[in-house]
Image 1 (spheres, rainbow, N blue to C red):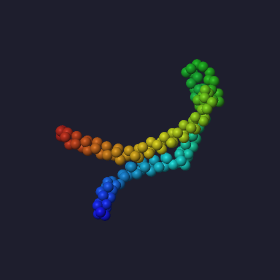
Image 2: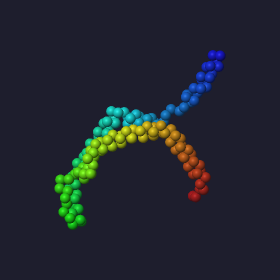
Image 3: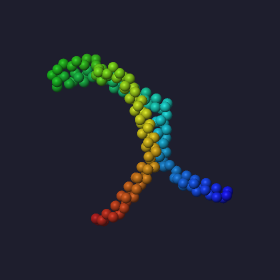
Image 4: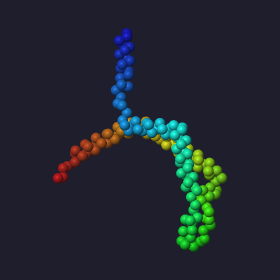
Length: 145
């Protein structure tokens, strides 16, 4: 009975032992996913993204508008205006929406990285099959030397 039980355990666990170690690309994807799904890292990245977006929003547009005046034939009414002024003029919740979108973008990147890490073995297998197929096609090509 013990031999039968031990044999059953070995047979059932054989696939787990037979699995290949994750490739370097899979390991890198898993590490990236782990980092991007870390709440501390997400907060830092969202803060960095928000700072970059805020810099763009604070860009003054009056100089650009002044340069376009000769083309439009109209006097610019953009004195002292910024991208934020133009983007938020019809949206009182503009700044809150921008901050939330930075956080959502970072969380989305973490989710995508996790999906990529999970799919990496299948992607690598598909690429190997494509490479093998390309070699077979190349081998069948007529020699035109």
